[in-house]
Image (cartoon, one colour):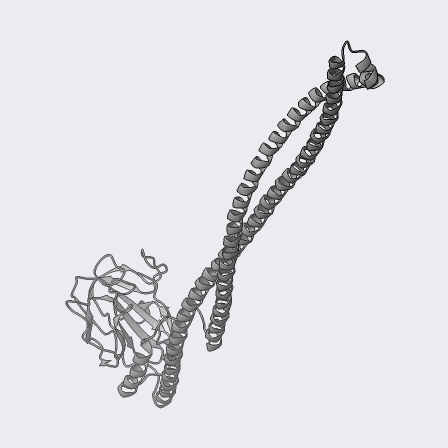
Length: 433
């Protein structure tokens, strides 16, 4: 048999004095009202606890809203950075076009430099050739300059020959002067070409430096912008993760509040139940005291056996569900009538665990016989032959109060009988005759 908890009606008993039927009926009604109890709460919650949780939710929601604002700001900032990057990319395209122009210009300059170098080379070759011719002519002029024109004429064989020599000498001298002038022009052209080449080479270096500078600067700006965007994206991701964390925390707090409110409401109900139970106990104690002062000692008569059958377990023994055994087990066939062991008032008649006929003692009847004594009858039938009595009903010794059944923790049909004095289990054989 499973161990029975302390009876909820033990507070009604006071040792030593009997009660009459009318008074016992009043006490039993009060006791029956105290039977309907609910399990004690495992956790206590106050209004301050609920208010504190609500304030915590407000704090979390405020932080979530602030973080959402940061996310929005980071999104705006990222958009701005993307716009700036678009401008930089546009500049990169312009720079690419500029680089292409510079490259074309460089190619033109390189071709011009090649042409200039080629022409300078040709001019230098021509100049060298002309210089050589001019040197020969100069030597001839030098020789001619040491002989006078008259000497040249007089040395001729005839006057006609003399005139020819004189004319040839003059032409030679005039041509030499012209060649020298032409040579000077060529040298000047070479100098101009050389100066132009130098200028173009300098321009080529400037263009190359400019192209490299533009490319390097735009590449640097692009990398910086990408780094800024990446940083903002990382910051945004962190803020979004924070928002999700705040949402989860808020949901957890909201669930906590719902649980706290449920516990708090149950506490209110439990407090009200306890208050009413305390009033019942107080009224029952006052009534029992009043009746006890008016009556003499002793019970209304001896206790009789409520059932005749095979005793399978004595008080204090052990069964599969209870050790030590708090009562006496009497085996009998299902449906065998069970009678009240003595006069009294029914305190309880029903399943120990409402709605669960297989739990604990199953179907029970509890009878109060005096301020201190009560008997409990367990494992009664609940379907075919339910107890014919109800709480508050006065019963006489030998009156049928139920029938042998199989409810609760039991392996066969039998009656579990308990005799209690002031809430403590005692051996039923002490009072049974």
